[in-house]
Image (cartoon, rainbow, N blue to C red; front, side):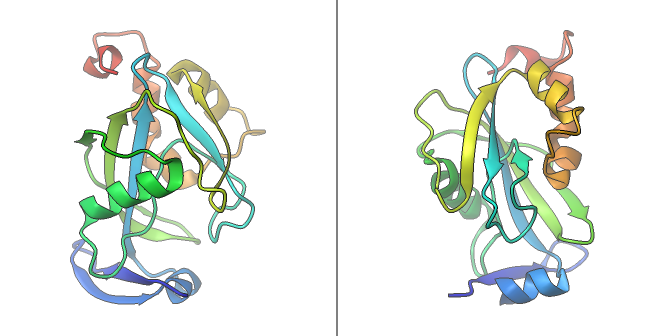
Length: 177
């Protein structure tokens, strides 16, 4: 079944809906979620998308997330996607600044969060092919390595935070898990 996706105007307000296939085919602006998952040691969960994903198949990602369904609250979409993709539930989510991303394949307003999770990670087999914890420094090394193709949207939206986490400094994120 082709799920209905909430479409957004330039101000981030819901202005309609469309089947996911139409949203992808016409690259319509929509809402999407992203969660940077860290453990108490400060490592970041990195995963590889399956080759069957409808956008950027087989790429590496360091955020769990997905599209906001028509009629769905963005926070509810964050909770749903985190549970579906990585099996993480009942976790406290910390809101990050929202952002916008657009390229030839996708156009959306991002509802971004982070969380700390020390429990098991259970991949949704249709979406996640592989995953592992990486230190921010190791992740930055991978982001700079062209043999590790990452999601361009996650890199644009959350890459600066990851790079800040990798820097030894007085950065408040450095001491938070």
